[in-house]
Image (cartoon, rainbow, N blue to C red):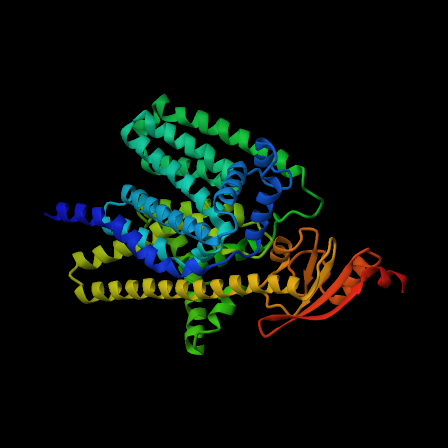
Length: 495
């Protein structure tokens, strides 16, 4: 009877997951393009009549991502500048990835509740907000899809020995690497899985190692291609990979991200300002508890107190995060998307272990309390996602309105320079203005995060002095752009 109930739960989980996900992300249908979304539209416009392979091997991209380029061109051709299909694409792929998380967790854990919990938590984890709401993060969703497909297929190959599973694993392996460099974690995820879940008898057979010959050759080939590709664009001292204490702080920051909205992140800090002060203080307290939990888990792992599925999912979280830890730039939530697929398995597995421990010992009140806390936690994540979706829609809509305003207030000509003063930290208009008006425009603002760009009006005048173009100075006020002045840059150079 219990087995039948378990099968019913598994059967109903996927449609229920999709139903909840569709309702949760419906507000995103009002979302507009923002930032690099306009860059992708511009790339499609510039390359739509170029030769096929020249487009896929876009020379201006410092990463080798031909599948991503194919996605940019295909969506631009089919959807044009309509953001709604792009948003639907992101939502659908997030739901597919949540389904894959459920299927993988069902393979790793004995209890169905662990698999269901993994899928539900992956669906509503706050650290996904950028991966889903930002249209250009579709590449993150897509590479995660290929990684999870490859990993799931490898598990099935190990368990069934069927050749079609290893073929699927290899095909997804290749596509993952051609999509985004995040896929470099995949071979190590497969290796650690085999170390944890294979028997000594299996490891004595040559057939066990035969997939590694192909995985290894593909991996080495990819590293060589990606390295040579990156060297074309590398400049001395300009790498985002640097040794330093930021590696440790990145570990801590991402661990907090997995559990909750990270209050150290500037964008999240802006969003959380709408919350009452006591609730905001509680977020900082919870962040401290999350940091301490990392130390506790490491101690438990060292003492061998974690089950194999728990220890594997914990290690897999950081294996899939390794490429981002040396980043000297600000952490980003989209980087946590793939690692969170394994983190949610760890968190759900931990909950399941505690739930059944209390159940077996007759601690009914504590079991109910644990379930209530878990429900409140999922509810808080859901509320945070709805909150940040609303903010993202507001920012993307305002970005489009402001970009259009710039062209309405002044005639913009080739090579004209625009400087905008007073923009909020999370609104950037460079790509939007170039898309709507002219790709040759130079757009700068005092909230720019780009290195080496002028951050004041006076710096902008000096930087472009003597140019045969005009400088237009805008001031942001009350969700609008006000034209403060326009002058020929040639005049500046003569003074």
